[in-house]
Image 1 (cartoon, helix red, strand yellow):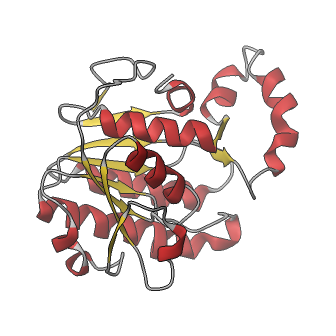
Image 2 (cartoon, rainbow, N blue to C red):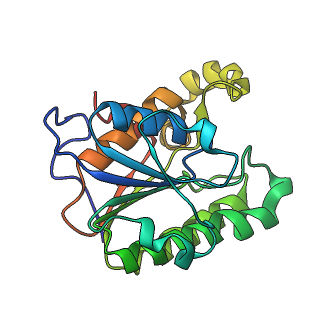
Length: 233
């Protein structure tokens, strides 16, 4: 059964203990921002990176070599009792990329889960997707299957479920904000508008930091869009 955090997502622990954090997908859209914030807060951060992508990571982040689709290639680089954060996925998802959602998003999540289980990871943080939604069915199905797989493994987990993360290069949905404002105030559309709401890259990074610094004691914790928006405030 999903579990909620023992404290509110709005309560940030300013004295969080130093943690070992291993990032898969750390050179993508969210990863460099998250890595920099974690390092600035005193955590030891190690990121899986392919040759040529290291420059995207901020100073203070350790580099691990390996294939994100082959658990055996990077399991030895994961510190015991670490937090593994799985961020890897198809950039700019669209219905035309349905096959890639299984060969990249799902395959990398399973490989990360296998590596985490073998390394003795204490907490697995997975960026999933909000659902159900009338669009992007293949994307939702791949992420749901990844969640199911991760639930079967022997570690506590946090699944964050944003719908769309606004930020540099990801700004076109700003035009939809007036429609979201209206939908969130109408009883018939309020729940859907909140569940499929937009979050900013700043909110996403803050929520990830909060999840890492406040792991659930066991089981799976789900953070939907409203939780992502308020975590760590």
